[in-house]
Figure 1 (cartoon, rainbow, N blue to C red):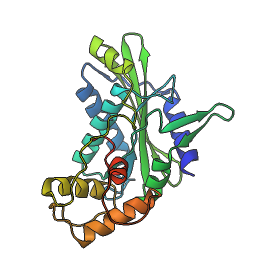
Figure 2: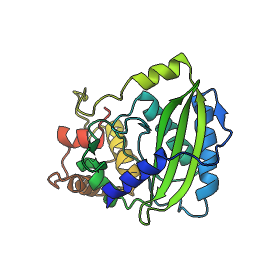
Figure 3: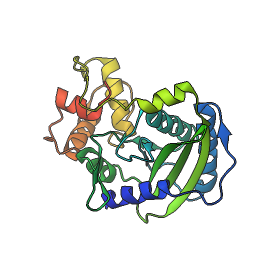
Length: 250
C-alpha cells in the first residue's frame, strides 16, 4: 500500500499546475515560507496537527530516483515551517538507495526503512515535492496526500530564482546513506547522547516520555519498539547497527 501511495504522490507532484500561481522568490527561505502558507491554508481543517505527517526529500522532476542538496534543503525548510505551525512531522529522506524505479512497470519501491517506518508511526499524510529548471528559475511543486484515502489534500507551486548557488545545490546529490557514519558510538549513560536518542525516538512516535537524557524503562522500551519496526532483533541494547538505523546522518 505504501509503495502504491508514494507512486501516486510522485505522479501527482509531476503533473502540471493547471492554474499557474504567480509565486516567485529569490531566496530558498522565502520560497519555502510561501509554499508552507499555501499548503497549510488548504489542509488546516483536514489534517490533525497531533498525528504525524511524513516528509520526504524533494526529487528531480526529470529523474525521480535522484535527489540533491537542494531537494534536501527544500524538504527541511518546509518541514521546519510545518513544525513551527504545530504539526507533527516524521522525516524520511529519499536518496538513491531509498527510491528505486522498476522500468517495466514505472512503479516506485520503498526501502525497508520507509516500509517499516510509515505503518509504525501511523502516518496520516505524506508531504513530497519535485523541482526542475524552467528558463531562469527552478520550478518547485509540492503536494500533501492523505495516507489512507490517497486523496490530494493540498498543492503549491512556486519558482525559485536560478542563481549560481542554487545551480550548484542541484548538481550535488545527497550523500549516500552508507557513507561516513560516525566512528563514535553514542553512550546511553551520557546525558547529551541519551537526549539526542530520546529526541529522535520521540519524533518518530516511539517514545512519549520526557526528553531529559535519563535512560530508563520507558526509553529502553521505545528503543526496543524501534528496533522491532526496523526488522532488527528487539533487544533494548544500543549498538552501532541501531545507531545507523536511527541516526543515519551522524
